[in-house]
Image 1: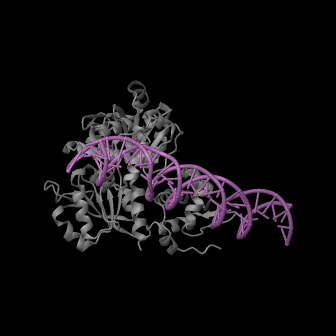
Image 2: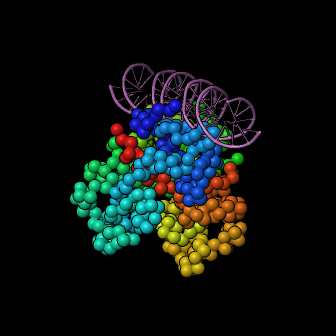
Image 3: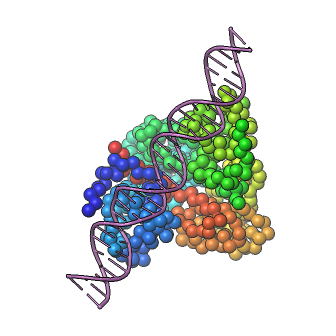
Length: 217
Length: 217
DNA sequence: GCTAGTTTGTGAACGAATTCACAAGGCTCG
DNA sequence: CGAGCCTTGTGAATTCGTTCACAAACTAGC
């Protein structure tokens, strides 16, 4: 019998690719839940997620043993386990920096709150925008940022400003003690090792497409 | 002396991670170009790009030999070479599907045109939106999509609609013969092997942050 | 309760990507 | 023009991630 626990996951370093796939599996499980399926096999999850059944089983095996041999996985049980692993069992407090088009698109994105990401505020330094609201979320002056963070203790900051000011803003974020940042600015940012920075970089993806188009057989 | 040519790159499969780093290097080179630096070392590129000098040299070595031992790389020469490798030496025709918040944010994004990505049109099926323009780009009825593509021959399609309709739209795109797709819908899409689909999935990145926050020492 | 049929969980094998380490080449300065 | 100093380009070693393959565990049907 498998004796892994949540704690083991902290010891063994989990690959980023594994975590991304867990997200994908969870999304399918939620679909299955709605449709009322009760069990699912690694083979089915693999097909929907564009991977292999061995990969699915290996990914899950880092965290424990969730299935029944000969049967598959219980949909509700595995969903719960994945949500727990991914840290989605709680609410995260999020602030967005930048009330431009991207910031606005983020503020209205329903998937945010749906998964427990609670947007506290949007920050901007343009006085025209400060004081207004975006989908019911207050736009605050950037000068208040540090004192607000101290009071409201957000865990995640989202950078949604143009590339030029992004590193400077990241430095301010890091100084407040926030340890997780999602960056939409199309620049490579540098932060201390204990701060996780994830980038969503459309420019890079587009160049990947351009490369693929230029290098086909 | 190194005898690699562009053609070799087509033979050896280049890792996606390598291509992403090439994008990053190019971004720095453009900064250096503006600042008037004439040469740059693999060490400098590595520092700015958050990698190692050996990695930089290995990445470049797949495509040729661009540097001078003892000296480094000529900034303009390497920029030109990278632009060529990434297929940025030409203009790509792009269509966006979906005139919602994300589609709008994309249409106004300056980096798009700057890098040679020319947005032909935005498509939507909401009659309220059709006929209007977004940053000077026409919003067209989705029903025209196939006939427009046949005439205007875009190479790249961007999916900027909610998850539910995304696979169906991708199928339509694939049927027109377009071979490169950038997907912003938070779902896993399936396409034939000869169609490159890149995903920009904020939900997944957020869950990666949530995981990182939940699993710190 | 035994047999046939599934499907998991996981070491071991494999393959891919990164890092090491160093020879080869080129520049600078005396 | 030779010594000293850099920095590239690249095989070899290593590390990391994926795939294979099979024993173990479970169900169902007879």
